[in-house]
Length: 198
Image (cartoon, rainbow, N blue to C red; front, top):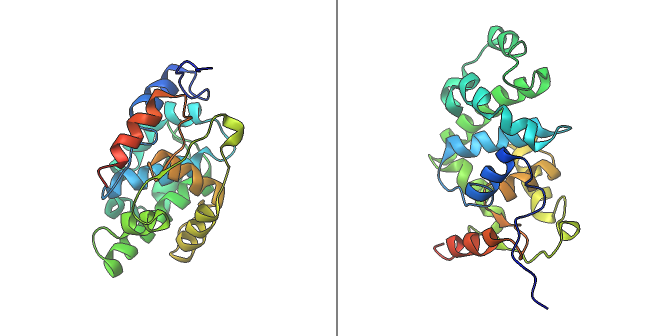
């Protein structure tokens, strides 16, 4: 029996569908700002829906200097006070402070390991090649993996915050380190094709 292709069931709202169809699972390599953005958004999602975060995405880009780590690393306590009052982002002091702290960690990582340090670190957990999973249902998809646990530990050791194993696995999915589109989703094959170029 052949199952008709269908989009991953988590993508219901218009913003979710657009994100699913254009970005989720597409490998992000050597783009520090986009990786910083995904780390920030995945950390901000903790306790909230992804739809909520997507609605605030442009606010995050505006508030955090288009995720320019050098600029965000220079934010001060005055910036924190301004940001926790800005309704265009999640106004959680810990999450705002973690974004600034993570920018500093990115800069430190780059200064010690080179210009692609963040990308190299993240991709090292999948041997620099996207993992092609073959999940049939959402129940099959794990919340975390040994790789996301190891990534979480490495990021925390490098000074990052709000990067637990579940957040790291969501980052791996979003940034295309793993292809977690269900096999019945047309995007599974599209992301698998992109992975062949690695």
